[in-house]
Image (cartoon, rainbow over all chains, first blue to last red; front, side, top):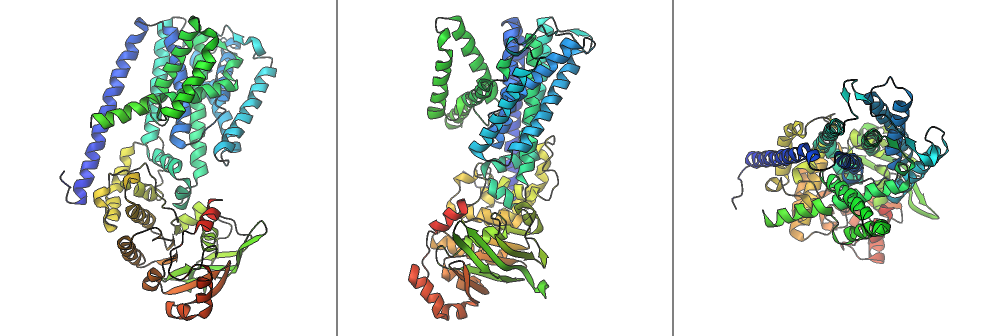
Length: 331
Length: 266
C-alpha cells in the first residue's frame, strides 16, 4: 500500500472516499425507490402501507435509539397520539382535508414529545427507559378513559378523504403513493440529520457523553432535539396509519407497541439507516404469515425467540450483519 | 493580583457520605505554568479535577477562573470558557475517525452544531485545521482511521489534539502518560511541552520523572488535603512527601489509581 505523503493528499483521499460512499448510497436508494414504486402492482397495497407506516415508526425510533443512544420505552404514546388526533379531527370536521388532519396529528405528537423529553432527558440508561415508559402509561390511561377514543372499541370509520381536496384517497393506489412520498421524505430527512453537523454531535454524545460535555457541548439540549424530532416522526407514522386503516385503537398506545418498535429496530439493525425499514418489513411479515397458519397462537413466543436470538447472536441486526459481511468479503 | 492566577480554588471541600475526599484545598495556578498535582492513590487528585470542571459538585468552597467565580457554572459552560480537561481513561469517540474526533471539538465554535438540516459537506471547511492538529501530534496518516483501531498511545495523542482544538486557555490533563510504554511517555512529554506553549497546564501525574521534566510547580495532595507546594527540588526534598509515598506505594511507581477511577465513575 502506498502511504500518501502529505496531509493535503490524505484529506483529498478522504473526501473522495466519502463521495464514493455517497454515490453508492444514492444508487441503493434508487434501486429501492424503483422497487417501492412497482410494488403495489404485485403486492396488496394496504399491506405495503402497513409496512411503510411501521417502517417510518421504526426509522423515527432509531434516530433516538440507534443514533443518539437513548432507549425510549414509550414511543407508542407518540404513535397513538398522532393517530387519535388525526382520527378525531377527520371524523368530526368534515371540512378538513386529509393533510391538515395529518399535520395536526404530527404537531400534537411533537408537543407531547417536548413534554416527555423535558421530563426524562436528564436520566440515564435504564432510568430514562423507565421514565418514558411511565409517561407513556399515563398517556395510555388517558386514552382508555377518554370518550372520544371509544376506549376498547377503538375509533372506527375514519374517512380517508381527499388530499388537498383533490386526490381521492379512498383509492388504494392513490393512498399508497401518498404514504410512499411521506415515507421517502422522512427517510431522506433522517439520512440528512444523521450526516449533518448536528448528526456528528449526536454521534459524539452517543459514543462518549462525558467527553462531549468536556468539549463544551450542552448535551441535554442535543438530546432533547433528537427526542422531539423522533417523536414528531413517530406521530406522523401514527397519523398516516390511522388514515390508511381508517382506525385508531388502543393497540397503538399499549406498551406492547413500544416493545415492538424496539424489536423491529434491533432485528433490522440499530444505528443503520435501512435497518429499521428491513426490521419493520420482517416483523410485519412474520406476524402476518404466522397469523394465517396453524401457529397463530404462537406469534408472541416466536417473536420473543427472534428477539433473544438477535440480542445474543446477531447484535448488529440483519442490515448490520450484512454490512459486516460485505466489508469483510468484498473489500 | 488575581490576574496572575488563571485558576484558583478557595477552601474547596467535597464530602461523600461520611468521607471527606477533598478537604479545604486552596490551589493557585499561575498563568503559563505547568502545574502538577501529585499524591498517592486516593489522595483526591481526580476528585479535584472533577470539581474544577464540575463533573462533581463541590460541597463547599469557591472556584475562580481569571478572578471570576465559576463555582455555579455547568461543565459545558466551563469548557467553552477555555478550561478544557482530558480524562484518565482515554477519552475519544471510538467509532469516529481521527479527523472526525477533532472536528467535533472544532464544531463547538462553528455555531452550526444544531443545524440538522445542513449537509455534512458543510464541515469540510474545518478539515484543513483538523489535519494541522493531527499533523502536530504525528497522526496525519491516521486521519481516516476509525479511532478504536488506533494503538493506545495514539489514542492519547488524539485526545490531546482534540483538547487543543478547543484552544483552551488552561488545559487539565488527568494522567496523560498512564498505562504507556517508555517511548510513548517521551512522546507525550514532548507533546505536552509543545501544547503548554502560551497556555497554562494543570496535570495529575503519577510518573515523577515526567513531573520533574515538565512541571514548574507541584502541589502534593494527601488524604484530600494539600500537604505541600513548591518546585520539584523543594517538594522532593520534603520528608513528609517521602513519607506519604513510602507509606503507601513507593515513589515513582505508577499505580492503577483504581480507587480514584471508582470515584470518578460515580
